[in-house]
Length: 398
Image (cartoon, rainbow, N blue to C red; front, side, top):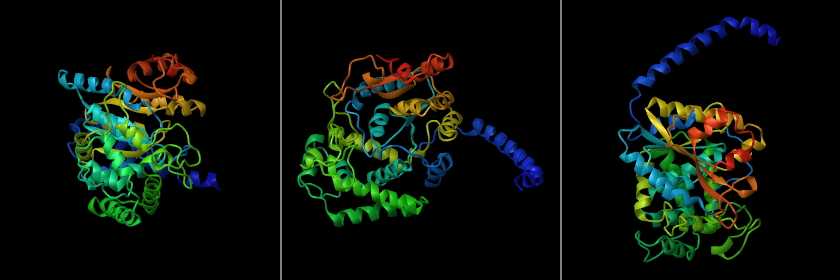
């Protein structure tokens, strides 16, 4: 029966192929007419990128609502120096940031000052997390209001927008979560996304945002990578939940410094927060569901960047490559990486460990480090068959 259907439909299939060729030809014409990267995306343009670039949601072993990287800020001074070189260079191309996972991307892209950013993660839950952040940031006038809404805790009295990030979280930690504030904030977020912005959020996404927000409210500023429903609050909240570890809490991550004594998170100052808010309000941080080894998301992002005459300035990959080697799909990722428009300044931001071959000095209490690896050199080594194991990747940077 399947063979008969195929035989009857071969002419239709040929027509589909012909139409696809025409469509590709039309797409190639766009490359000369796309123009520079937009200063702002309309709501429809933003949501079209989200939907058209995304792949089906995939599996990862954890929710990753917050980072587990103690030293993620250690590369920020180098990223800021890189951004300065690029801004003073002789008319180079505009820059786009790529990253994976939740809000640590905000700190990196603020350091790099790209014209646009794409956050690509295999979990649709990460897209929902990014949309939650987008709504809260756009709804909150300053970082004190943002943190208050994020954890559904009343805004601390006598805490101004100019307060230090340490005092900000001490003030918030002293407040109790408020179920009424939680319900109001959730309704405001969903209304902002679906009505004000007009995004076509499926029921799955609305329920996902509600479930993710519930975890932020439940665990408060002590939320960690290992926090789970039914667990406790960790350090700032007093009680330690199941799965407690030395993972940093959300508050820790915001109060961390860059190894040189400077706090550089996106909540380190209200100026940082306002810069992030401006990017969100212009729809220039685009979340995408995508597998690094998939055949669509990264290539679509790369095509978009190339068609707008731009270059990928940095790609925060965390330690995703480790899992790609475990699943023996790493070649597909490096093939995808090779399609991105890069130059000699373009880097991967990677979290590495001596256990996996990193030969440099450990930076954090867990022995890990955050390092930069030039993308062009990595691709050249891959094509030259110099990479066969994850050790070959992590031992590249000292």
